Length: 301
Figure 1 (cartoon, rainbow, N blue to C red):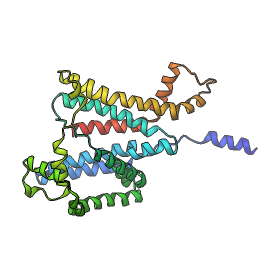
Figure 2: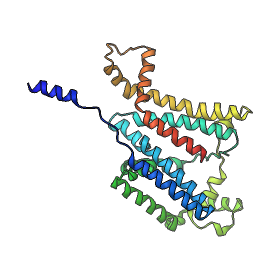
Figure 3: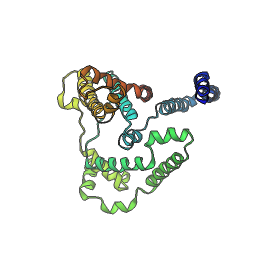
Figure 4: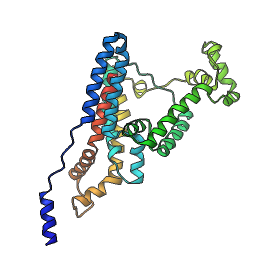
């Protein structure tokens, strides 16, 4: 009797109804009204309004796609979930295409940074930091907007550390400036009154003395579109991202796909492998959509 009644109750339950986004609509209406008032006060506010609307749209896409590099990497190893990582790879491919178009039409002058050991050190520090903090910069921002108090603490300390660095530049490091940096900075023609801290000498005496290269610079097809699409996008972006997608599919998603579809053999054929890859990407569609939106507006910005 109880089983029948529970079944009937379950059958009578209506599907989950999506709530009307009252908060989002209210935010957009107030933003439009505020923008009109500010522009009416003085047209110079158009610059602030442009930053505001780009920031608002960025925030919406960040929150919708749960766009966070720290979560993407952490989830793969911690809980073997590849949704965010797969979405990020697709978003990076889309951004590569948009960047190629923008560069091809000469809307953007891309200036590559030279490679240095400092990038490996800084990347390692940043990587460990964002995992311990529970999110990268973008993840911290959207989580703060969702009301996550831990992310608010991280956001506050991000701002505080920037203030401390800008005010002090960790002055004790000035005693360890290599003489070669000082000589190279002077040869760059930079006035000495602009060289105050180790960071100034690091940029002027080390970074500025090295040249960065892109794949297009190395291959040089003598055609701007071939350079940006074949070299910078296909070779430098598309191929690495596809390799990452294949690796995370085979290591983490494939086993779940085989179990879910009840295949009797691990050799499921190329067609089913493609379907498995597609199922992985479909699970990441929110991150993909959010990433595409971010990349489109980043290109417009």
